[in-house]
Structure formats: C-alpha cells, structure tokens
Length: 465
Image 1: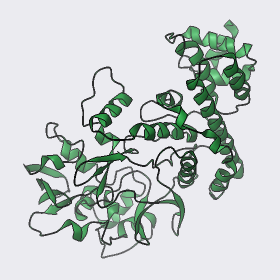
Image 2: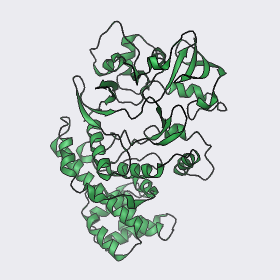
Image 3: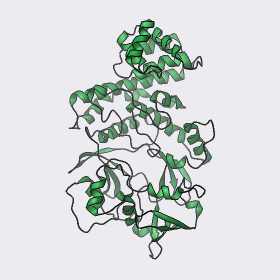
Image 4: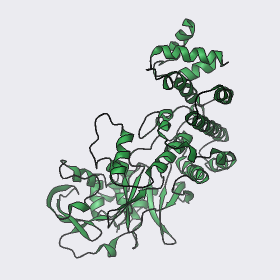
C-alpha cells in the first residue's frame, strides 16, 4: 500500500506500508521541512518510530479485548483505517490513488465516529458495521479515553484507574490550583459522568485546525544533547534555539504545581509547545495539561503523603523545584482557602473514603506550606529569622518529611558547597535534635537520605550519636 504522508494539504513524503500498518519503506521525500518535529532522515527508523508512536499504546486499559472484538491484530492497522488523522496535529496519510482533501476529512471541522471510544468505555459494545474514522485511533496514554463533540467543541473524556478512579478528580483540583496561581496557561478540566465508566474528566481541545502540539519528547530531538548538559538545560536550549516564547514561566509553573500535587507522571509526552502547522512558527508553550497521576491517586490511606518519584528533569521533587527561575511570580496566599473546595471535589469520588480524602487534603496542605517555605528559602539567605519561620512549621508536619530533610541538607551542602557524604547525615541529625525534633520525627526525616536505606541504619546512626 502506497501513501503520501501529508501535513494538511502539503505532501511530506511518499511511503510504502505493509499489511500490519507499519511503514515498510520511505519511497521519496517531497518536503523535508514539514516532517514531524524530531524526525530526522539521518537517524535510522526515525519516521518509523514516529508513526508507531501515533498508535494507541499497548498499555491502554482494555486494548486487547477491543482488538479481539474487531478482529484486528495491531493498533497500527487502526491508525491506517482512520488515515492517521488526529486532534493534536494536522498529519495524515493519503492513499496515492485517492483524490482527498484535508478539509473534507479532518476531525477539527468534520464529524467523526465514536465507535472506537465507545468500545473502550462499554464492554458490552457490539456493532457490526464499525466506522473507524475516529481520532481515538491515534490517542496516546494508558487510561481509557475518547473524543466527543459537545456543542461544536472537540472534547477529550478520560477515565480513572483502580482502585480509586481518582485521576479525573485530580485533574479538576490541578485546574483549580493553576487558576488560583494565574502564572501560566492551563487546560481547564471538569467532571463528566459516563454511563458505563462513571466519573471521568473532560476538557476542550486546545489544538485548532491551524496548530499542532509538539511534545517535549519530540522537541528534545531537534538538537543533539551536549556533554555535561543536564536534561533541563538541553530542553531550554532547544526552546531558545527555536525562538519559542514564554517557556520559562510555563516550566516554572509546571514544577511548582507538580510539587504541590505530588505529580509522578510528567514525562516528555505530558508537556510541550504549540506550533503553527502551516508557517511552522512556534507560538509558545502548550497549556499545562494531564496532571491526573498525582495526589497519591492509587495509594491506600496509610501511604498518602509519602514521597513520589518526580519527572521530567529530576526524580526528586525537592531537587526539581530548585530549577524554578523566578519565585517572585508566585503568590501562594491565593491558595490559602482552597482546601474545602478540594475536599468537596474528592468526596464526589465514591471509590474513596472520607478518611482517605481527609488525609489527602492534609498532605496537600503540607505541600503548599512546604512550597511557601521553599520560596522563602530560595529568595533569601539563611538567617535566624528563616529558621524561626520554618522549623516550628516543620515540627507539625505529619507527611512531607522529605522537604524537611531537603531544608537541612541545603543548610549543610548548598550554602557551603559541601559534597554529599555520610558525615552530613550526622550533622543533620545533630541539628534536628538541637532544634527539638523527636527521635521518631528524626527517623522519618532521615529515611529520605540517599545514604540511609533502612530504619536499622538510622538506629545505628542514633546509637553512634
């Protein structure tokens, strides 16, 4: 099967595709400038991998059953059946023997089928004449999702996951926090009640018929990462090279909000920039979106508040938030009365319990208090006044002990530029005891040390003291 890869009505290249829906061969390059961002003709299989990533991922909940019901072997076939059309960009594949115009088939201006989305959402879905022309064939992510049209707007509906189905509610809470802070554009999420799946999140598409979303993952491929350059520095270098405006404010906000909500899934596909699909001019950062995998969404009550792995530029939220360039843009007093509203959002989730929801709110409150103290820490020098502000609050923390460790570690190793070593643990413990922390609190704080891997090691350190 021969196709033209198109960007709107601009031919990009001619392709040979096999029966499984994979690119078999690149026959001819017709307009290299319009190749998808991150695709390089100098990198083997670059375009092949891009097309593969355009399919529903194998991790999608319920995928195997849907494919089995439709007697389809791979998601790449689904992509071909919908001509690769998407609601996140303007790329598609055109059969070489067909006279088709983008304006006649794109999903931004034309109706589309909901059969694929309905098949994922409803296990009893049965239909013999399936219409495969759907943007659901090229949607990413592991959660069940579907595109629908509401009063002319293209909207994405997304489910939660077991055991608490909390992600939709987290999206609404993240939107609330972002709206209060007002420091960067964001996608506004609401709740949507699906007959089969129950509570879901819903948001309007922020991409139009004239724009496209370019993920950070794709953007990072534009330039080769230089030696001794961090992943953060590389991303910002790429944005500067491409003259993308307002990136710093968006990234700063993303770091801060991800810290507050303990987001653990801000990978390179969950943020990016927007580009004009015709002029190829970069417009700016994409609004902050996809924040549902947060607030200990899948944790039992006793594990709520524990540290989570961060992304994309550091695995530790305390370290990643140090990358914020301008702390003065944030007025955290705007979040002072947010807790009751957040609780009301969570209690709408029947899968959780009032007790667990209350613990989440308490842990959220501590993280907001933490970010206030972090702001103070990185906008002033260490002095007695800062200690008098921070330490009494830290003593009251029940959950966010990681930030207390980071505070004392900064006092030891950041100001004095001391390389980390086990002796620092002793000095931190000595300071904690002098500042009046209990032995039990010291244990919870020190477990965040990269050197202390168990409570037994902490007990030995205490005995040595």
